Length: 223
Image (cartoon, rainbow, N blue to C red; front, top):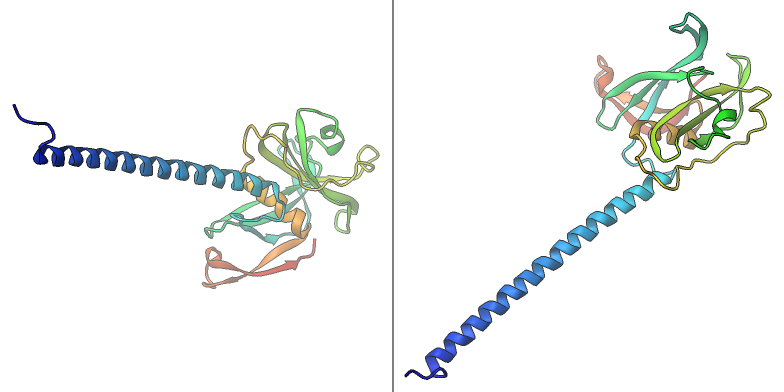
């Protein structure tokens, strides 16, 4: 009968123990790496979540590069309303063409939003007298009480809303649905730079607006 603790068997046992320990060590290292990756990912999401609450944080946002003067336009129901064209340049260089409306009846005004628990007012800007329109107007944006798509427009002053104060930028404390990036960026832009602010741009190609590049300078345009 062979002895268990003969030198060759003793060496074999040490090798098995060493290999087992190596597997355990590798598994432990892999586990640590997995945990670290998970924590880093969570921290990144938490950081990103915190960034959207900071009105000064424009990371990932493009910029408004063109604003037209306020002008009258005909709505689908035939009524005449005030509007203003707005061109927004994404960081990718793509330009979206849209605009702002004034007192669009399809959207509730601040006096309604202010008392309706289903909505959350994100931002109410200061009153500003528009020479073109001949009225005091202001920008505001809102979303659902749990977040989601951001709506915005301008409203003119009346007896019901004139005493509703300005409101600094704030998202719902609990976001069940993240806000849409575009609405968030437009709101932050106006909250940071004002109603008539655009980014100065220069074109790398004088024959195409798709090559407009922001210079980093914010300028004011007439309304």
